[in-house]
Amino acid sequence: MLDASQLRAARALLGWSQDKLAEQSGVSKPTIARLELRDGEIGGYAATRDKLIAALEAAGVVFQGDGEVVQGGPGVRLRKEA
Image (cartoon, rainbow, N blue to C red):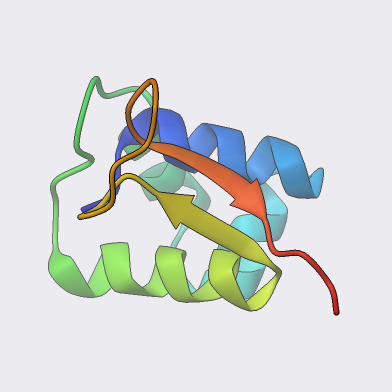
């Protein structure tokens, strides 16, 4: 799943605006803004969530906490380059 705080944090790590994420994911800016205002899981359509995750992961974001033990709960980080 994707938490709204993870979505905001991932954009911040990349230095992306909502417009940039919309461009990269194919999800409209108003939808991104609405999803980011939520608390907890973003919900909505699975296809929308999948597009957002795919765009952010392609840019180097790693989502933490979904099925893995992470201190402090779900989070995000940038992929380490080899």
